[in-house]
Length: 330
Ligand SMILES: Cc1cc2nc3c(=O)[nH]c(=O)nc-3n(C[C@H](O)[C@H](O)[C@H](O)COP(=O)(O)O)c2cc1C
Image 1 (tube, rainbow, N blue to C red):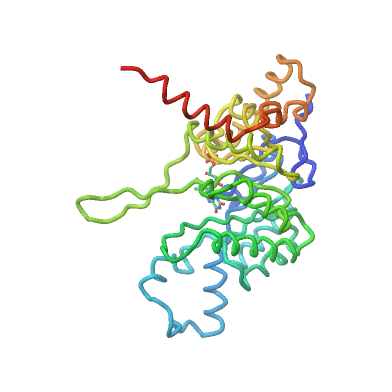
Image 2: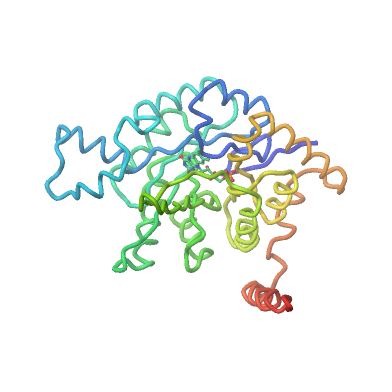
């Protein structure tokens, strides 16, 4: 059974993409993921702040600019804390390309337009098959309107996509007033695909130390539901590719994401828990499911449960919301 799929115009042998994570720091681990059946891998992100800081440091010989806010900048990791410096990142990308036959996707993480987007070109020169641009941002400023934020994001995507010939996908958060409109603006700006969704790592409160304590908890399956809903809503409305990231842990999660309209699923938590070989388990499970249900390939399955056949998706969503609240009886 052929599990191949097309994502960002790239032909992948399977829909299993290893999502942005530390896996690619180690070429041996990346090879194991390929051997287990991964269709592509995404490197961990290179951050706008990291590139900007390095460039400023070069220009100002490590002097702190007069107008900077030392408290705010001290929140950010120092150079040595980033796992890969920008130069090291590019060398790692080249090494991965030499070692692997599956596509390698570089990840840039930033939401504001700026000189750092030049790095897209460097990714391309280093051999990246595509770029995943992560727009992670949490807006806390009451003066900042949503449309300004989105305009910056769209401009960033336009700059990155315009600077390279390789495809650019965009990893977004679910917290936009009109995610479908925003996603179509991203496509208009040059995005070849959308990755749904960023996870927000909510810090807990330490009530003894009176401090917020950041924590990285791996995902669980309940997180997939938000992705399924938006894949089902977006897939009939977008021309490009869709990837699900967040909460894909079992074969049935993979089937559901494809039914909702995903071209690929990204895996991180499940592989950190069970190891690279788990991709083979998921691939075998997917093949069995397809055979049992009479499908010849995953293209036949894609979008079968999307909103394509729903004439008024907003009314459908609202009706479901109202109905579900009525089911609880005391
Ligand atoms: C240890 C770790 C490191 C990660 N690093 C990145 C990163 O650099 N860039 C990024 O876009 N996402 C990063 N992610 C998020 C994952 O790519 C993925 O979107 C998220 O974990 C949800 O998928 P999952 O449910 O399969 O874990 C990271 C996740 C983990 C657990």
